[in-house]
Amino acid sequence: MVAWQPTAQEAGDSVQIDLGFTPEFIDFSPDDHFMVAENDQRFQVWNIRSNTKILEGKHTFKLGRFINSLAVSTGSGYFLFGNEEVFMTIDYQHNGTQIKAFNLEDGNLLWETDQLDMAISTAETILTAHGAGNVEVVGRPMNVRHNSNNFFTRDKFLDRLINYLPQLNAIAINGKNGLQLVDLKTGETRWTQSEVTGGIGELLFDAKSKRIMAIKVPNSEGAIDQLTSKPEVQALDATTGKLLWSVEYTGTFEPGYASMVGNTLVLPYLELTFIDVVNGTERNGDIKSRLEGTRKASKVIGGIMAIDRAIHGSDESAANNKYNRLVPRELHFDSDGKLCYFTAFNEEGKLDGGFKKGYLKIDIHKDKVETEKYNILGNQWTVMQDAMADGLFYVKASGNLNRTQITALDAGTGEVVFETDKASNSADIAKSFNPFMVSNGRIVDIVSKGIYIHDAKTGKELSYTRSKDLGVGKVKYSRLYANGIILFGTKGLGILDFEGNLIAGVDAKNIRDFAATRDEVWVLEKKTFTRVDAKAGDVLESSELKKSEHVFFSPSGKTLAKFNASDKQLAIIR
Image (cartoon, rainbow, N blue to C red; front, side, top):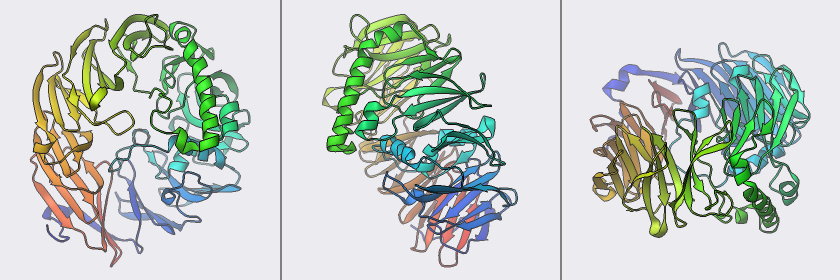
């Protein structure tokens, strides 16, 4: 272990800037173009390609990202929109909201307003409903939605309340007077739709029809709202804001799972709902008819859950698997655009009374089941993950005695091709579990006690490496990266290739952040920062951090920042 010593490599690429204050956080835009440094009182925005300060200011309220309580009433936060080069500060409270938008080219104020009264209580609801119980993992991985559209915020509250529509160069705000579409560059309110009020879980934009789909959720976690609200999808004309249609859906909303496929909106909240976005009607076919009993039961259970919340509070009703609700999973389509789906149903094909799991291949545009295979997995199995590759559909399930197995099906016929041996695995559906992956004709299956490598076509076990032999202790979590797999264990971190071979190990128990690229892996602990060559496994740097020294880096792993509180100097290494 060495003290803070820049390496020869980084010394040539390092740029020193004077911040003049000590930041609690330093964040980077997804494209590593801009940097935001902030603490509870102030912030600065930098262009780190030109190493120039664009903007600085003071926060009106406590930072929203600091607030642990889910019931947020007052706070300050920001959005950075890289494509439009706009930085937006938002000071929010129950009785008013102040928004300022700045040009990231020169730092000039573009517009400001206090007329966009955001429905704060609605946002509290969404956070309460969907912010609790998330799996805690180390690091700050790339947010797919942020990365693909080159924008970000670190305030989860604002991320729920304001929806960015990059295709329209606008933001949609769930206001007290309805849904408002606001131009990012000018601050002009393009329209306000007063008929779209209450909780909005997610907005989707359909470029083909130029429509916005608002997925509604209950107004609050209170029993009255839960019992009386009507979860529905509302479609609006993106140009005028005109309400075109509303379709009710059943199930508990989960952000990020709704999908637009052609003219069909797929909602996998309670099994499946197929909505024709042209006509504004639910498709009336096999899945709808098979779900009638489930939907009726779900409404009854929803009422019981609402009463439970009123009596015991939200924590009681959120107990793991209390109501055995299905968890939405990624949707998989074959080469013909047919949905390949694995779920529970009974011998008659009804998705309302069976505990045995089977396979369905569905034409979503006709709502027609084309292939059906019943009882592939029995009552004791809970599906955790599924995947598709090269004509095979893979299902990882957890069974009795904390064991998991992978079953491979022919995606065309639903016939079982193989099953792997049951592996001891302490993961379950309510906790962080270790995903499997299919790559280069092999299945890499990570379990709590090690890594199995199987032939992806036959299921034959090619190798097994115990986590004990990797020196990481018991595996808590795993993540895929460009060169392979990173294992996070009770004793350290392991960097492996796609064959399961150990490239390097890092002794680390309290990891605060990490980033991984094809070239390097960065690991930050409370008092230590380590850089590892991702290919050779050599330790490039291991620095013991003094109390005045802090390390920050971008999720992409392309930008590293080292701050010294004694002189307020920040070294940026790219």
